[in-house]
Length: 110
Length: 114
Image (cartoon, rainbow over all chains, first blue to last red; front, side, top):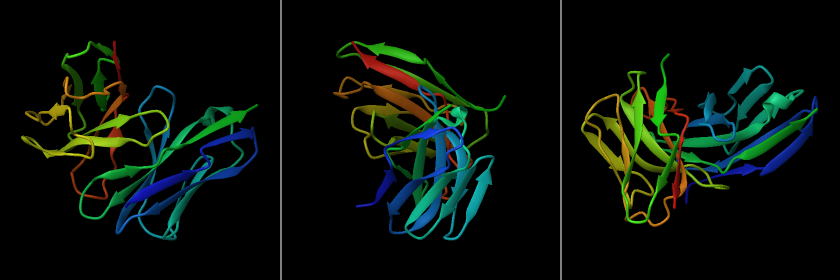
């Protein structure tokens, strides 16, 4: 069965303490891997799309990377405003369906 | 501003009652989607539409219905057949229904059964 697993489930960091979130996936054909940020009670906000192994994308303190089996979201020197749930989703070949992981809840403390 | 507007933000449903969640987008996107989010779980696809007057069931369509009469609008009706409707509902859209296109989300609607 196609699956997307995110780890850890929750992560607590001190301000400035860099870390990485993981998204592992098992789909028969990957068309794209998406990262979203979701604040409590809000809709997911698009961050990155990765299409092929080896691809990397950056935005401010965030950097997303992709291999054939997993993706990492690296957070460098995080600030409290980076606190949110980060969602990973995988798009299967053939149509536009997204398979979502359960997310990683990130809390950054001053 | 361009975006996806969902209403109402909060909705309460009585047992046996049908309710409709509104979703409007002004992004000129062809494809629209409805997802359901429960605590500790990933988003699950209810219905999607790749073009006006056409829609397909997602993974958890039972107890829900949709229509797509206009490109801008994709309302979701939660029927009395949906036994556990309390959840956060998210509407989304993308340029086309073909894979590789980014899906953008609205702000969500909370539905609670009372």
